[in-house]
Image (tube, rainbow, N blue to C red; front, side):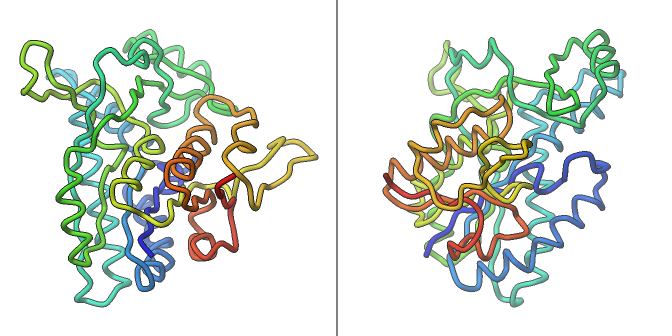
Length: 304
């Protein structure tokens, strides 16, 4: 079975944890044995989020006032290499020495007229108090929104249109390589209006969840797993009557209300993949990845 596992940025760095390299490596190291177990039985493609990581890189870049900060597309590419490197290393430590792994720096086309550029919604970076967020908004001109009980920076998150490196990704998979790709949804790029053959980067972050269905379809995956820091999709989350959906359909999931930036994009990604292919998708905790793949944990999403 060919399995695409999309690792959420909050699965790699749990909410409220210090954003240190060692903490992120430790979380990946903890998940590596289960991911290796999946890779030993199935063909594995890994994508990953980068919201916390790219936001931190932006904050670090802005702190050095001597030069203009790097744009978000460059920071997104930097995070693809950074996270891919740690994933390769820690996963490789759990696999047989001859097991091939490769990280593909992935560019994804977006539409310059996408309305997301006028309405930033993608959370990036660490969490702040209201007072800290107000100060940063005043100092740097960043936009902020509530994320649970905290505040986080938000940036535009345009829809992905095309994965440019999809052919090399397929070639590697056909040779039995474990592929890490479309990190952070891929680096957002567009063709310039004055020269339709010339690519340029875009100041945005593509939602990894929205890039996962086209990736899974294009590699002809049998299963798409949205791995996060919560064990599944709940109705009435945070209330005494909260209820976990163990087996559900796209229509049932779409009837649930989700706050912006919460479980909504993962639900939409799972629904799009199931509707487009008739195959299975799942949403659940990275710690439960083996039973999720086997259909025994998380929220399993099947065709209506």
